Structure formats: structure tokens, C-alpha cells
Image (cartoon, each protein chain N blue to C red):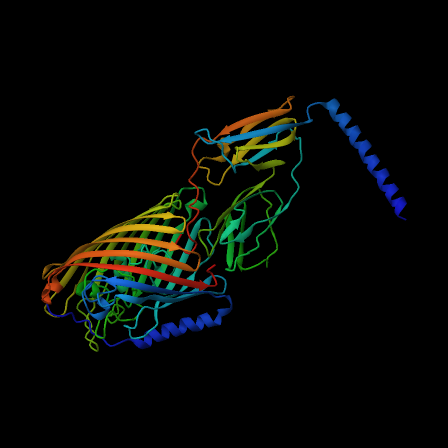
Length: 228
Length: 408
């Protein structure tokens, strides 16, 4: 029965293609919702590119959808979270395996999600679900120096700036609220929010300058056995 | 001055029962215990006067008769969870064969660690452990990652001052809630430290790394016993700690063992030493590998047997500067110290320079070279018929091998 199945599949694909073409034609008539590239540059107060900053772009005109929840993993390796920052859509689940030989005891007292995972090795616990937007600071109750962040967002477009301090995404045309965040930010993230309209051009650029310099990065090469 | 009345018979039972209890607890939870062992051997050359462990007034650990190969420390440390929020910790060491028992416990305690809530973290310890004073002894086993020999201040703490009791520490975790600062409050209540001060009054300050095991003796039979209790008074300390990110730590602590200096143990003849001090310290670290530490100590110790009151005010300071180059650490430290006496005026005073190179070859092996020179003026040396002023130099090459569940 394979040929009929293939035939049926082909017919289905053809119908989908026709539908998509019709939708594109409709969109073409509607005009403003075609995709364009949104490019956000983040700079420190002295004008240097800031890499690793979280950028979110939230549509103000109802264009775009809420991002689908994802499944992410934040491991614990060599007494550190890996990665030490994750950005996930609201409703996502995050697994916190412990790949170290020592036990960890993960907690958060952040308002967006309070939880704790009692002492463990390996992967004894199911992933934790994050249903509220916000920044969640994670720590280990055994190793005080361990620190990580989860940023839970409802923005359909999000990511982190690259080494050149830039982040880009193909977005539907319309108005956006662009926000940035960084774990070592010294100013209110709300002060750094901007509105931006992605108009007829193929590309819209926005450069955001921090007003205050970041906190210094944690000292990297301090042995774990030392007092924090 | 008469020789100091600090003779007392050993309190072996207490020491043994504490160690046994801890070991039992560890065995009960052995499945999940983290352990670490280390062997630190030294090649030493020294021109110092007779070591305090041999009853002398030398200011360094090894004296001119100790040149050659020596045991630095053989160490076993165990940590094990007891249920969800409690854990037990034990640190046992062999330093030399000069103690009553070849193995001594330097720290053994239970810790209660509830999860931080609303930005606050509480820690409670019960047992025997170091009060949070030193900013230098931050490595495992209360060792210094900068030098082999501790500063004069922290050597004194290693020899005579230990909390055998309870301590609570409450931290406000500002850096976890978007601020640049953390703040902490510490309070401790303890007993069995009525002997704190006896070594300071009989030897003065020293610079070495020989920690006195809990309930052990300092020096040969008849030597000082800092960990005693017979006046039924509880000593206290309280401290404040401020941190700026992970760069700066400022600590201030007031300690008072509240001993009754008129008390004499009728069995052993030991006297209670009323010792109180203020301490302060500042540690600054940079992302480029620099560390600077300043510590300051100022206090007094008092005994008042019938008809006499003797007071030894003491103070010490040090400044340490250290730079890490990858796996190597270069450090220099300057110490100043002074013990006065209400009877004799200046009792001991001096200063010391320490220079050290430490090389962490990998997680297991460490090589260290340290040069230490102490110049001191001691009333006691003159009393014993020698020149009061001595300049003592000790050079040590140390090789340490460590292994265990957490070492890799």
C-alpha cells in the first residue's frame, strides 16, 4: 500500500503549498506584516560592544505569536552551572542534571519561581516548569559560589548579543518593545526598554547604550576549594 | 616572673568521645560522604631557636635541630550530609609526634543549612571549628593558599582559639537580589577555651602552620592546654561581615571568652585565662589575580590568682600582597606583633617578612617554597639568660599530594 500513501502525502503537500501561496498573496495585499530583519546593537556606556546581553522583542500590534514552550537543560559541571544563563519561553521546562561527583542542592528564592531540588547527583528529578515571566536567580545551597540565571520571557523574539554586541531576527513588520537584560546590569532593565517600528525597509536597526557600567565579572580562576 | 601555672592532666575522654561521635555519624552516612586526604612533606632549613612544640621560644615551627625532611601535615577530611539540611564535617591531621595522640581533630562540627529564603541565608554550626576571623586561611583544612606559614594573628588563632560550641550566621544576599553588596552577622557561644591566651603569655606571637587539635596540648608534657573548661562560664563572640561582589570582604569581630581569671582548677592547677580581643580584616581581590589582605588584632589576656592580677595586652597586624600567574602564586607578607605585660612592660615584640611561591601542578600536586624571617625581642629569652633579640630564618620546600572524592 505504499504508492497510495505516497500519493496521498504528495497531494497533501500540494494542498499545503497552494494554501501557503494564497496566504502569501493575501499578506502581500495587506502589506505591513511581511518579514524584515531587526538588528539590535548593545553598547556599554563607553561605546564598546556588549556581548552576551539578552535581547527580547515583544510585538505591540499583535503581530507574531507567543513562543512555544521549550525543553532546556542547565547542567552542573565542575561546581558551576552550564550554561550559567538560559533564556526560555514562558511555560518551558528546564532539567537540572548534576554531572559532578559532588552533590548539589539547587534553589531559587526569586518571585518568578521559588523551588528547591534536594541534594542530588545525576538526574533524579523531573524538569522544572517555569510559568511566570521574570528573572530567576539560581544557587546551590552547598556551594555558595555557584550562580546562574534563567530569564523566562513571553516575547516571540529573543536571544543574546554576539561578540560584536549584535542580535538580529527576522520579524514581521510592526511596532516592537525591545528590552535588554544582563546578569551584571547595574540599572533597571525597564529604563533600557525602547519602542521601535519595523517599517517598509528590509532592515531596522536600534542601538541601545547602557547608562551605567556593568558590575565586574566574577573572578574566574579562583579554586573551588577556597572560601567564597 | 614565675613560670606560668598552666599544667593540667589530659582531658582524653572528652576528646575521644567527640571524635567517636563524629566518626559514628560519618559511618552512618558514609555512603554519601565526600572525603579528602593529603600528605604534605617539607624539606626544611632553619636557624631558629627551639620550637614551641619542644618547649622553646622559637617563633617558627621548625628550629635549627629540625633541618632536613619533616612532615608538614597528613590530613583526612570528611563531609557527609545528614538528611536534607544537616551535614557533618571532620578534619583530622597528623602534624608530628609531639602530641599526646598521633592523630588530632582540628575541626569537627554539625552544620545546619536551611535553604535561603527571601534573600536571607542562615547557617548554624555546632561542634569545634574556627570562628570567622581569618581572611588568609581560606583553603581546605584552614590552610592559607598564599603561604605555608600563617600570619602571626592567624597562627595564634590556630594554636589557641577555637569555638567549641555554637555559631549562627545570618547573611543578607544582596548580590543575589540585584545589589553590589552582601552583609552578614555572626554570633557564637562557646566553652572549653579558658586556656586561650596562655601560649601568647608564655611564648608570644609565632608564625607557623601547626594547628592545635581540639583538646590537645601545645608543646611537650606539661605544656599549655588552650581547650579547657572549669569556671562554667560561656564565652561569646559577635561579628559583622560586608562583601562587595566577590572582590572585597570586610570582617570585624569581638571575642570574649568571659573566663573568670580568679578560677584555678583544683585538680590540675590550671588557671582560667580571661581573653578578649577585637579583630578586623580586609581582603581585596582583582580579576587580574591580585589579592591584598590586611588584618588587625587587639586584645588582652588576664589571670588573677589570689593576691595578684597579671594582664598581657597584645596586638598584631599584617599586610599580605599576592599575585596569581595561572597555576603559580607569589606572595609577600609583613607581620608586626607585640605582647605587653602589666608586670614587665614590653614582653615580646617583633616583625616578620614572609615570601612564598606556590605552584599547583594539578589538582593533586602542589609544590611550595617559603622564606620566613622573624625578628623579635623577648623578655623571656633574656630571663633564660640569652640575648633578648633574635632574628630567625626558616626556609621550607613543601610537596603536597592530595586525593579524594572532591579532588580532580
